[in-house]
Every structure is written in C-alpha cells, then in structure tokens.
Length: 461
Ligand SMILES: [Fe+2]
Image (cartoon, rainbow, N blue to C red; front, top):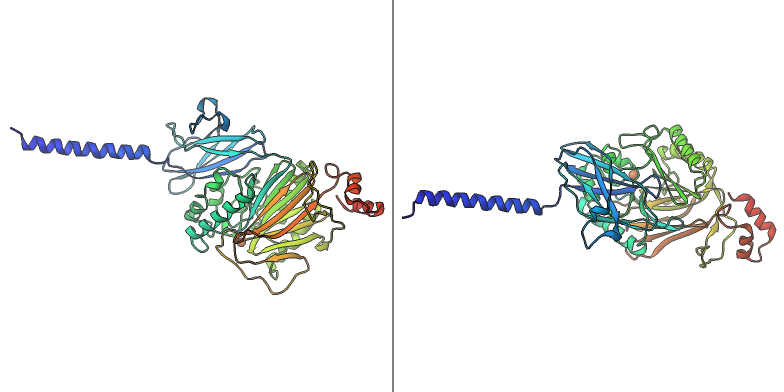
C-alpha cells in the first residue's frame, strides 16, 4: 500500500531536483559574464590593445590568449598553440570591472584568434578573430559624433551599425576605425556605452576613440585602452592625450576638452620628436578649429592656440568632429590658405599608384571635420561661407570617410550612406626622401618645365 506522505515527499524532491538540473543546464548554456569587448590600437602595428568588462566577479588579473587563426580546428580555440598575455583589472562602479591587456609581437597581414579570461576559475569568453594589415599601404575609416543616446540608444546604435556595415563593404580590409569624438551623448551613461559597444565590429577592428565634450567622464577610461596615454598632457576626467604609430603614419589624439595649450604643444612635440621619421602625421581632436559655423569664442581660442602648433610640428591632416557637418578645408598655414601648385596625372601602376586628381602637398595642413555617423543629431550649416572652406556638406544622412594611405599618397573619400555616393574626394602626393624622386616627378608630369619643378621642390616638405 502506498504511503501518501512518502509519495508527497518524493514528488517534492524530484520537482526540486528537476528545477536544480534545469537551472544548472541554463547556467552552463548562459553566455559568460562579459561585455563591451573593444580592440584599440597598440603603440605600434605590432601590438594590439584589448579592453572588456565583467560584472559581479572578483578578477585578480586580466588575461588574453591569442593564437594564429590558421591553427584553429573548426571553431575550437587552439589552446596548446596559444600565447598568454596578462594585464590589469580595475573595479569602477556597481560591481563592474574593466580589464585591459596589451598583446605584442604581432606579424603583418596575419589572421589571429583570441579569447579573454574572465574569472579566477578558468572561465573563458567566446572566441573572436581579427587580422593585421599590410603596413606600407592600408586603409582606415573615419567616423564622427555617433553620440549614442542623443535621439534614442537603440536607434542611434542601429544607425552606427548601418554606417559601419556599409563602410566595411567599401573597405573590407580597413586597418582600424578613427572616431573623432562624442561617441556617446551622456558620458556618465553606462547604457549608452553598452549600446555603442554592443556592436560586433569593435571585437575584430580596432577602434580609435577621441574624447568629445559629451564623453568627458571617467567612464571613457574604463571603456577604452588607449596607447601611450599621457596623464600629464591634456588630462580631464575622461583621460589624456595619446598617440600611436601605424606603418608610415604617426597618429596623435588630443583631448580638446583640455585648454592647456602648453601641454598639447609639448605632447605633440614629444611624439613628433620620437617618431619624426613617420611619412605622415595625422592629428585627431574633437573640436574643429576650422568648422562649418561662425566661430564662437571657444573655437577662436582653440584655433589661435593650436594652428601654430600644427604648423610647427608639420601635421599633414587634423581630423575633427563636433559640428555634425562635413567640412574639408583648403591647405592651411599661418591661418591662411595655401594653394597647391600642381596636380599629378593619375597612375595605377605599382609600386607608385597615384589617385586621380592628387595634388602635390604643400607645406601646410588640411583640416577635415566628420559629419554624424549614426544620424543621432544633425545641425544646420551657417549661411555664410568662410575663406578656409574647400567643401562643406550637410546631407542630413550619416556619413563616413575612407582614408587610403601609402608612402607616397593619401586619399580621402567621404560617402553619404543613403546612396553610398562619394560626396567628396581628395588626394595628395607627398614628395621627399621616401616619396617620389624629383626625376620621377618630371617623368610623371611630362613636359613640365624644370623651373616649375624646382619651385615645387623648394616649397614641399
Ligand atoms: Fe561635440
């Protein structure tokens, strides 16, 4: 005869067991507690920086394991062939921790696979991939003012996703993404960072962030792992100036929320001193000093204090955002327009390929302000024109730019994402020691007088 009490107890026991097994199965199937994985550049192209976050875990150290993609068997991480790198972890708020690691010794033009250590018990993240690029000739992407959350986090993130997808269709081998600041709308909003960094692109394509006026909060420093960061130059709550070298180019990223111009000048001087042999020197800062609108006092202050620095240290291009309107200036020096002297005939024969319409770069700086990349916010352009404007575009659709860099030429093609038409394009050729030999210039121009060429040589750097 069955005892109802025993039956009842057994039923309760098996129900509890089933629930426990279900929870265990769910726990083992749940994704690891990891978020906001972002690649940022290392100090040179042979390094790769990583940053990610965990929640509610006590993590003693940050660990990245990396291996050649060619060593993978199917989707399995090749643990026995991986190298392990460790870094630093820091708690920041509400149980969140930020983890930063630098991997070194990367080869050029190589596919890698990696995973992130996320706990003291040997837990690992999913497996991700990235590829290094050829250093002598490569493409980077430029976006401006994604400002996630200015309209709506989900909509703005979808807008940026669409822009990045389209940019990578144009430039699938891009080496990294330059972002000219205002990545989020409210610098203290983890939700906005979560939206921005939910995009999968940043797990495989390094992201180069700039501190915008909307980003000026310490959360910036917990979400990005920037190289050569200076805590003595351009420091605000979000972080300081930083720089890196990629192949033939020095990239200097300035925190223009800091108005300590002596510090900015010293930082650029030191970076150029260390890497003066770089073929190209590109600066990036959020506020445009030659913008789309009537300059306000803050812009005039920035312009008057910084154009002399960019002149002095030979910046080829200064990239900015902030205006949400696309602007390309003429070449500028001493706050005046410098017109290039000569155009090159296009040439598509390696090793020297010259984009159509390329001009010989004079000893001067080109300023370029990116438009909104997400569509989160647009501004109307001023009705006035300004002496420095070569192009100003306010299409009220997201835009991005593709920058193709070789030892000889630098080409910028800027697209509107609704039609994917090239809304603006510009190319320059740099001559000199590692660039075009004067005799080749004569050959290319063909028929140009020696006197003109000598004059060009004297004016170029
Ligand atoms: Fe801004």
